Length: 407
Image (cartoon, rainbow, N blue to C red; front, side, top):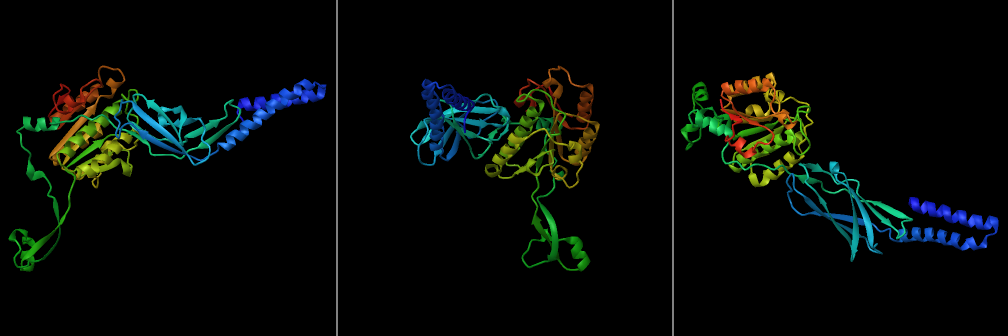
């Protein structure tokens, strides 16, 4: 198709030719015809270069972290025929905006490199990319849409924790874990008659007494999540600019806790309050499951509508049946405080990471209600870590900062 310059040239050439014919100015025929021929040649040229192009993209790293520069190498492969000397690649990269780069010919390929600077955590889709080929004078162009490709995932920058603030709290109150309160890894499925050679430890005595013959327990493996990390993603409770918001701090905190438990070989589960099925992931095998958990953390957005206390109150939910529970939130409503205290009365360990959202908006001090809620949780025996803007995440989650308090 013709560009704006091409349409102007076409009008100029046609007007010049008509003027020469109308006024008998034969000297203007040559310029008029020349301009029209140039426009026609531009159309022929771009049509001749109208080859199917395939876009290949490579990043300079497998798992870019938030705040890093990401170098993107693009390559357009022509499906035979003539290859233009240059083309323009227009590539929208999600909220990072459109990237426009000139790709130059190298053999059968058109190649270029561009840099995305200080990319925030998130999932960025490469959609709507176009390759634009123009003639040397910019009179005609051909725009070819390119197929969408895999998104760019930028992962949160997690802290490698050796000890957790909740564990420091347990040690301060007598050290060891109360293993009697932990649920078993097997559940009773049914009972059956005793067979010779079986251990008497499996005898189900109530059934034996009722039937007056030895009955044994038929157990089935029912592995449970030892630790559930709940990331509060309810919308409307965040503050601060992108890449340095309170929700980004929540994601880093939740991811760091999950990572610490997963490295220890514990069955861990991450749950977001967005209510989407894809926003919950279990880590039972570190090598297999941890990459998927990282993807969920990278893609997490604060767009949920479900309050975190509703999730904690769901009797069929993972958070209710977990052995340990860690909640990461930026709001401490009375209903949430009551849910946490109720959970602490029946679970072995409940901990909370409270991200002080007002500090991410530039305010030095958070709400007095939040301070009162923290004190009440402490008195109920719940370990609380308070994370403010500028705090060292590792020190806070390990319990070395003054913002950490234990019940």
